[in-house]
Image (tube, rainbow, N blue to C red; front, side, top):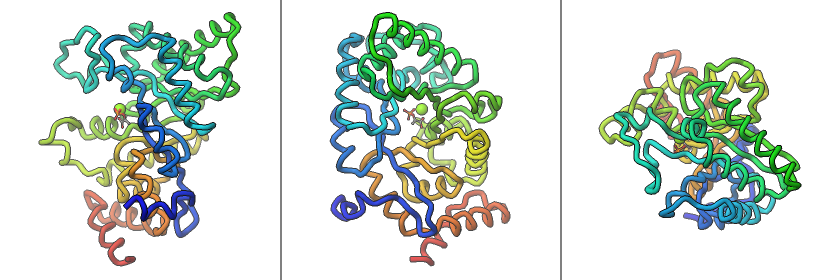
Length: 324
Ligand code: PEP
Ligand code: MG
């Protein structure tokens, strides 16, 4: 199958009606990096930094992390890498941190909430990222931001780290982007100034969908009950896209659905122009995008919405069968 996609590896994901979607890959370990070249990804849209914490039995040191991040940037050869700060709690528990006894870990003390309450680890991580960049461009993203002040507080930590590096005489990144993941419905309704201030947003579809439908992403009984192509969910995503268009906020989508060809098609039809997925999905997603007329897919969705269909899947599958 990889061979089948090799012929389009260096071609853009441009639809028949001329819309180009940029495709990036998700990564988290050094072992993922060779895929950057093989997959045809334009960069790393989500680097899950917690994986390097999860494979250890003690807290990594700053120098060690800086070295790792530096290797990641070297391997990316100037392509953009979006480093997500530590996303722990809920399904990701570090063996060397005090376990939290929470009745609902997915709704609990996790990700940026931990980072803001106990900023030591995030400070160390931001410093490691700045050292690793050593003057190169740097992109950092905070996970699970649920409201505006969490973003400003996390960004203030970055500003402090920059100040410190400057005083110590270390080079600052020639370009720095600081973004947030949109993973809770609340953030979609944040004030306009949030959208203006944030350098970019990335939709964490796995969590966003879990909270949109109130259906645990880890619970097999309810997980598959709600379709990503549910009209309500697609309409919600479209609202986020529209807000970002208004404020010119760069937006991408990095949940697992980005790597499912049919889902990716609908995300593109809803206006998303940047998708990040596991490397093996880039070929199949690109292949389908290149064979499809996005305007027609959009029309299928609009009609399904007008008819009151719960999900656009049946109508879309029929359309795809008819167009070959
Ligand atoms: C997501 O929630 O969609 C996401 C990309 O982050 P994770 O799967 O690591 O929670
Ligand atoms: Mg998430």
